[in-house]
Length: 472
Image (cartoon, rainbow, N blue to C red; front, side, top):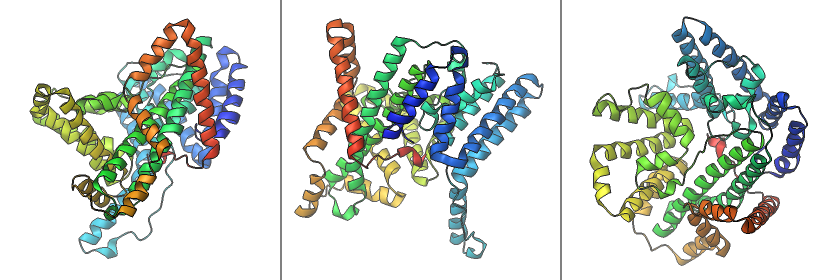
């Protein structure tokens, strides 16, 4: 079940809200927990057992690490258990497949594994594993106390608004909200608005851009020209941004409705003037997680330049791997890590002396090339696509170019322009103007209703509603 589905919007969510608001305040975590388990079971079936096991194991480990004198041993045990589960379900097939490639390369095919297990990837395992690890590590660091109430902890780990698509919510950021929250009309209203904005970003913009990206990326590279290749890269950049940020908006909005304040996850990353700035604005909860729980423990930037570069290399290798069991993701992570290192070496000073337009074009070019690596089915296709982007090939047949351009009709062009506009902090400024003027606020609310109705119409009229998180 995804947020951008009629079943969620008109059956699951209304039923959950009714159950939630009819429950007395001190028991409100119970309906939220039960609804979250139902939500996960709907899509994942028996794999909900893994989620429940994670909640039980980490609940007891949190209590134990707080009470025992052998804290490092318990922390190590917790890390092994959590990452072993993540490694098995997400990376076992990938590891075995690469083992087969290596064995074949060495001419030892007889030692290969003939039948890969084809292990099902539980949706959201990357998100709830990272949340569990941050909880245990923060107890170890004495930044918080273990929660002795299982329902509260399980609600934190299993909460459906951010369970399958983030943001990665740390326990310390919302621990006071488990028992000290009451429904607030302003918060509920704000949450509904934020959810609808996110829904429209996903349904109207991301899905439209996805159709263009899919059409181009699924075409033989020899049949497209350089301009079409750039359009494909642009379309995917818009798809993944409005998909990710749209789901984050919906999660944050749902959190507000239920009385929780989730952290922001995106801050207009495409306005960045460097790769360093891009990662301060893109998937903020993931970037900050790696900073606090991997980069800093490795020594951060306090251990000399060479070691700092090595730490960045490790962090972005893992960042790529976190997104999926594929060399494309790993290379994408290392691509960004390489440019972060280049900027630290001295490229930042050169950029600062240049025009802001040049800085921006540099950043977007690196990001767009990265998205091609991220989106392509394999590294060979990614290389061919990038080569096409810079080959100045304008000589494909008129029919082929016409067929591709026809996928970009007037509506798609309008959505593309809207995507570009909304990539800048224009909407937030317009929203402030409308909300600060009581005579205009009603216009804003009508606009929210209109885009919700448009989103519902689009969901109902199209079977194309890709769930990008299946890859992660």
